[in-house]
Length: 88
Image 1 (tube, one colour):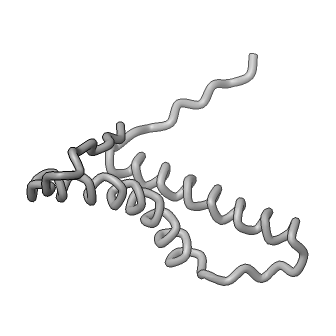
Image 2 (cartoon, one colour; image 1 turned 180 degrees about the vertical axis):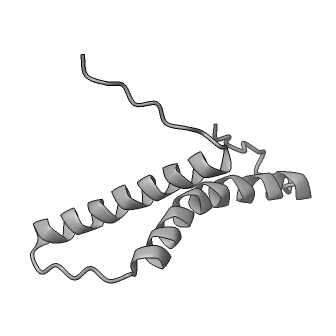
């Protein structure tokens, strides 16, 4: 939940108000930048496809693979066992 710091323009912001106003947008940005960094580190930062549609598909495949890797890592860390259902 984001908050907007409303202040009287005649008074200065306190240190805590200034920290709060700068912390919230930065934290949102870091939440976005972290997965991008992880994907680039794991699969490389280059897109090798030539056409625009192929480039989009390549990036989407990288995101899908990243999500699967995160799921597998969480399963191992939390010692979760998948339960597969048999077709009737």
